[in-house]
Length: 93
Image 1: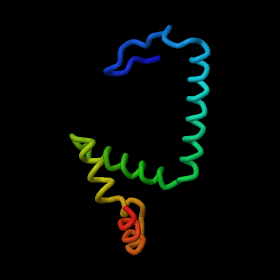
Image 2: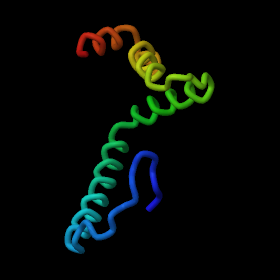
Image 3: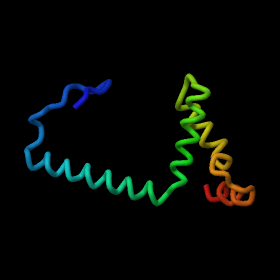
């Protein structure tokens, strides 16, 4: 397991073998569920691709602020929603 910034070394003996197996199964199920969800919502790929493209082109110094502006201001444009669909979407928010 790789060390991540801000986290200490993993405690190898913290979980019993039964707990480790349950955790492993939970991780597998979560990955499968996430994959099913993403496949059933192709618009997520479009949203993320557009966002990453803009990040890499503009290289903003504050990624959180940029993300907030991107998803609040440009969401309908990113989704290619027609004006009437955009109005409905904004009203639902």
